[in-house]
Structures are given as C-alpha cells and as structure tokens.
Amino acid sequence: MDDGVGDRVHEKKGMYEKKGFDAEAQFLETLIEFQYGVDVKEDLRRLSGSVSWAKGWPENIVAFWNVEAFLWGQKISSDVRGMISSVLGSFCSGNILDLGCGAYSYTSGVGFDISAKMLSFNENCRVKVVGDVEKTLPFKDSEFDCVTAVFLLNYVHNITGLLNEAKRVVKEGGKFVAVLNGKPVDEWQRQKEVPTKTKGEWVRLFGAYFDQVRLVEKGGLWFFFCAKEE
Image (cartoon, rainbow, N blue to C red):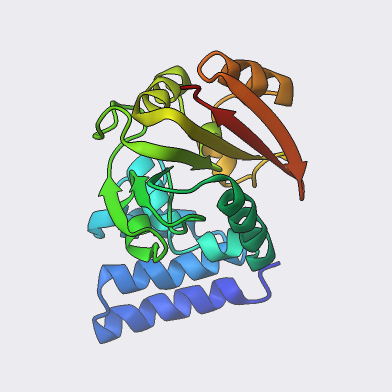
C-alpha cells in the first residue's frame, strides 16, 4: 500500500539535502513514512547513525525503544489506555513504581525505563528514572506500595531476576500487577519479544514470588494482581 508514498520519500530526501536539513529531521520524517508501510528501513538505518538517540537502530535495544517513543500513540487506543488506568487505579495506591513505563504511565508515581526518549514523552509519572529492568533496580528494599509492569514482561530476558527485584522493592502488604496482551503483539515489536507464556504459566511463575495471585481478563488483556503478605 505504497500509493506513491515511496516516490515522495525520495523527493523529500533530495529536498533535505538541498536545504540542509539535519539527520534527525530526516530520520523522523522517514520514520513517519515507515509507519505507512513504505520500505525505507535501510534509509532509517543509515540515518540512525547520525542521530545520537537512534544509533544502532533497530538492533540496539535502547535505540529501538527510543524510536518507538514517537509511535506509542498509534499502538494503543485512548479507550484501552483509559480502561487500564481505571483498573490499575482501583488496585494501586501510595508510592508506585512503574517498570518499563515507556512513553505513558497508567499511574502517577516513579517511571522507570531504559529509554530516555520514552521518558521524555511521559507526562504521567512524577519522577523519571532511566535504567535497565534486566539489572538490579536502583531502589531501596520495601520502598514502594505497588509495582506495575504494563506490556513489559514479554520483552524481559531475565524475568526471574526482575520478579525478585520487584518483590524486594515492594513493602510487606504491598502489591505487584502485570498487564499483558492476551493476543500476540504486533509483528514489528515481536522482534524484541522473548518466548511467550500461557496464562497458567504466568500465574504459576508469579506464584513463586508473591503470596496471592489473581488473574482478571478484560478487553483482551490479562491483568495479574499479586500481593506480598505481611
């Protein structure tokens, strides 16, 4: 479904060169075309080498999610975002840590993400911390009342390490909630996905770290509500 968009991309490229547009502007304009199905991946790869936050795209994990920051609004509808916020708001309160928050947090708390570019778009978290969920979290033991992981765990390789860390930073009597899509993620983001699990496998995994696990299915999403007993 090119509809002549590919020709316009090359026309724009020539315009950029003539008018001296910088690489970042070229990259962002070409990224828009990419989202409309135009085969400009190699153009983006070439341009990414001159854009500090996109270098190594799409193989580099940080660069990949930095670029996704510009596209998050197209991934999840406002209705779904509102539904998730409502569900989490009824479960989480107090000091909240949102792991892998990306460009949008469904609760107001501390947003933690590997992508500084993602965090720069996030207007819902009150504190922004750049870091890697695959490593030890830079927070104190029992620091949070609730920890959330929304659309994150499918991309985590060290899942046992992360759940250990989530349990460590949650207070006794605190909560952990994970939200996962009940259907496969889109083909583009699937390239960063780790092997998926069934609902039952997730429940059993969470049960190894938390004392109570409850699964709720709503709007095609899986909500796993976990509690850490006092």
